Length: 513
Image 1: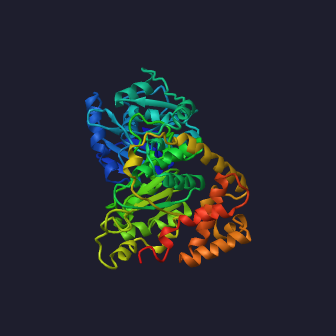
Image 2: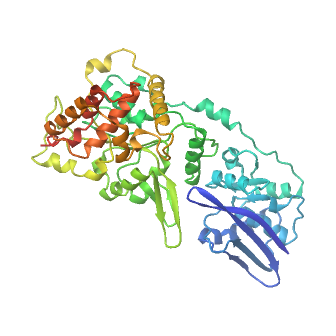
Image 3: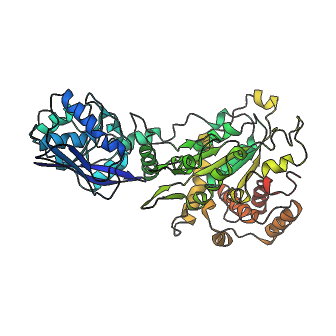
């Protein structure tokens, strides 16, 4: 007898439906075909132990399990439950009143038949609804995550026996539903960190506001303890709230990576990722034999913070250059390729020298001649070329630390950022793929960032006197356009340019001279 149901395989951030067929015939042995990996092949032992635990048996005949299409590699342990149910139906140990073929079924079995959570539930649920299946049977711990998808019966089961009784009609399990939109709206700005907690550093807060308003990448240069990490942690709290579409994209990536947890729901706040500087290339951009999203994709629609930038491996930083431009990362293998979205704001921080006190107002730098230049050279020019704002961070004085003056809240700053983003949305309405000033290509900068004669004269003088490199030109114009947007000004004025020129510290030839 033949039994059939459906599962899914996740490639990148999308799922493909997999047909699971089981036939029991004359002969011996258990055969699992359809290009399974080792974890899928081992399902025979988990399925047999679970069947025995609930009083069933593994047929002592020839059992053939086919995972189709057979030319796509299947990986992971999530095929245990559909295989077990098909074995029971094909060997006529159960009579189903509900049709197995109406459902997508996934779940890893423990040896006692309980179900363990799996990864990639959200893209599977989205694909199941798209393909018109009646429901999705999955471990109870993953049900909340799948319930984000409406118009699909999400049935969470704790054990294999629960699934058997559901299909036999002995047990009715109420589909899980979730007020996704209401929950999302209630948590949309629920950030723990707030700019009102930061005393002093008004110039750095201003730079962060400009970065958030235009989607610009930032590098902060300053001594240890100046507040670089504290300021970076608070950047997501002033970015515009996630839209539902952005939240769904972000949640899918975290679902595929298995980062959502048991009681997961739609991510309502922008992600903030801060990998350690010992991170490998593959962990940063994604990869592996069966590619998984890296830190840059987990930071999609949010912030990636690289602390102590020169300490990162050069190769890890260089592979990040293309994703910074394309806002996606493609990982290719011999037979197939996957693409992960990677539209993030890069916030980097670094000490000005190995000892950390070069240009410090009070402490003396003990680094030898040429050491500062060599340290800064660890960050390549092409990477710096993709960072719009270079901000010098100075230590906060004792008086500023102990002052009780109320600081501006993240909510107040965010309102200004949202107004500036609305101006950009209107500006780029007919430019697909461009949503902020930072995304403008060079040709568009010439059209959008028009400056008058006085502004040109100022820019020429700045580039000559400060020794600014040619790559700083476009970056200054983009930042000046954002500053003008924050001021609700249609044209870039000379004061906007003057402020933008301040944010090119590392382009000055005299910086580490």
